[in-house]
Image (tube, rainbow, N blue to C red; front, side, top):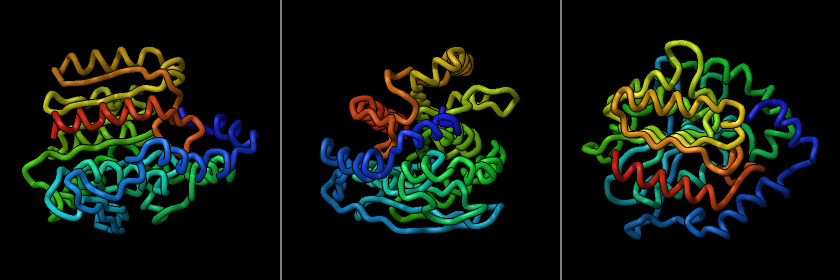
Amino acid sequence: MCDQEQLARWAKKSLNRRTFGAGAIAGAAAACAPMGMESGAAGSSVVGRKVSFRTAAGTMDAEFFHPETGTHPGVIFWPDIAGIREAKRQMARRLAASGYAVLLVNPYYRDVSGEQFVDFATFAANKGFETVKPWRGKLDAEAIQMDGRAAAGWLRSQNAVDKAARIGTQGYCMGGPFTIWTAAAAPDVGAACSFHGGGLVREGENSPHRMLDADDHYLIAIARNDDAEQPQAKTALRNAASAVGAAAEIEVYPADHGWCVPDSPAYDREAAERAWSRLLATYAEAL
């Protein structure tokens, strides 16, 4: 998992924007053209804008990306611990280019709005974990389920969203469990996709693995070092999915925590592309 000790190691190595921030994003875009695409699958441009909407806890801010024309399945995108930034915008644009209406949400809206860290290097080198800790502490199952319902409702009100399709949700790092909590709370959500998510199996009735549902599809991609720390989690998740009859793809990837995110020091292009292809396949089947 992404924790304070790991962040300290990255910062101690003097990792900065030149080593895995802006340079990593640029490298990913160059190596994999779709990362920088601004055209949708049907040839229309991808458009994006900042948005906000009410929740029971206040006003959530987000960024919304979708093809310029047509209607498309909606997706709620939960970022990792470093929040909204250019790496996450690139991922949201890429998904929109594949024919989805993507809502990149700010999970920390109760405390701050918009981008707080320009990239993961800035987060790691500037005590980002300590900064977000009090914000993150408010994001329990109840809070995220409330936010997820509000986000799904907002998507349903948008002209760019296909109202006949179910909604997808994807999350990275701390956003992994948010996907399952969202799916459990919002009937419109039909797919929950977690990438190197932390805390999917935990104590208590609100553990994500206890909230799987037969009506939803699950894609749970586990980092090898997370699996080494909690090897029983994959088995608990598989058993839980089997018990309720849920369609679930649960796999340990040969890559470290953070491998899907292009500004992460653990970014692994080959494994990230494989995970991306499984994301699209899951959405194609479930939404």
